[in-house]
Length: 173
Image 1 (spheres, rainbow, N blue to C red):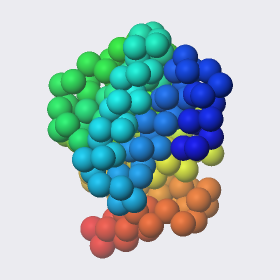
Image 2 (cartoon, one colour):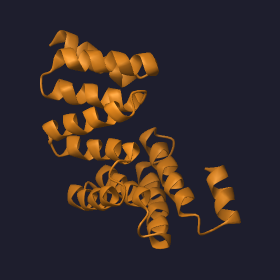
Image 3 (tube, rainbow, N blue to C red):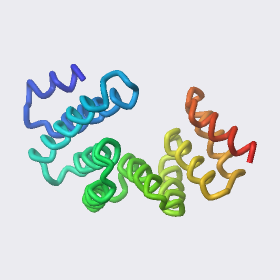
Image 4 (tube, rainbow, N blue to C red):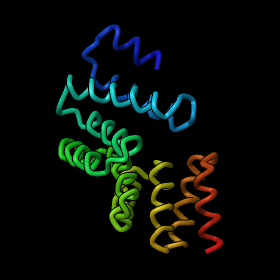
């Protein structure tokens, strides 16, 4: 956070730094380092500032979408933001990974699998992509695929606690 703020002191029009700042504030709330309300306000403000500076910055739309779905509980607004984001940069793996989170929240399970498979085929060392694909496979009952994808995620990032949980559930099922 301090480095992004330093960058913004040097150049207050640096919209990508505001996007990353929004992500940092979101992560602070997600990890209970600050309150959800404070996280929401700070993340939303940074994303909105980035959009004001550059309305065509795909990552800014995605950051705003993540804020909308996580804190605002507004899947319609989040879907609009992701739609705009992906229209600007349709092959961006990070944007697609974030969009997968929205698709999961609104119950689009097959879409989650398609997005997840695209992500890992284009970025095979993306541990988050493999972990999300494992969860997506699990939700549609493809347990062997979920276990395989989860194990790949763990080879890439052994400390992924949620992935251990997903594999455990699949083994039980």
